Amino acid sequence: DAKTTQPNSMESNEEEPVHLPCNHSTISGTDYIHWYRQLPSQGPEYVIHGLTSNVNNRMASLAIAEDRKSSTLILHRATLRDAAVYYCILRDGARGNKLVFGAGTILRVKS
Amino acid sequence: GAVVSQHPSWVICKSGTSVKIECRSLDFQATTMFWYRQFPKQSLMLMATSNEGSKATYEQGVEKDKFLINHASLTLSTLTVTSAHPEDSSFYICSAINGRKGSNQPQHFGDGTRLSIL
Image (cartoon, each protein chain N blue to C red):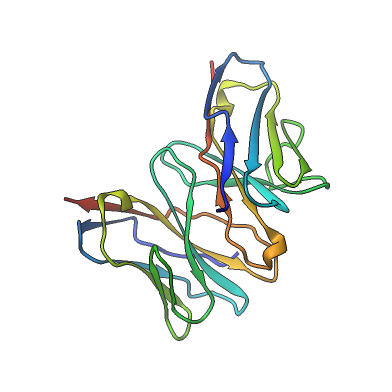
């Protein structure tokens, strides 16, 4: 499985945008970029995913670099409820639906 | 939509007991379900993948006789931890996919089961 690299932790102020980076320099052509987040003592929650084009949904935006070797999850206005561990995961569309979780980024939101 | 319910939320039992955890997809048909475990301060580790009506595929290092998985219907998968010991204490999480909606569907997760073996 292709690996991703994320910062261990990030901090944001409430009501401000947050940009969470993810590097995936060994991404293959059939790898989708998935983002999940996990709040304390809960199961993960799907956030967004994409292949080549930028994606938007009600939770976040996903900006994918042109060479696909990196991506950025954008939370447009962070709230205290966005404090969580954010996981960037590559999933090979040609090899099934497994997710391999890395360490993720711990996002702290200050009021 | 896409709600996954996991039961029980937490369980405490004596060493040597077998514990069954249920994972249900409430509003979709789960063609594939996954079981993970997570130790404190660590990330999720995939234990096994189960497809409805067929045997589960276990990840390397996971004992299939210790962690019995049954995916008998399109809305229910169960994980049984047999003869549980204190080292099996962990946070167990299931997820489900509606594969009939096409490839690369997101996984929908349950809220996890915290298992403590005394």
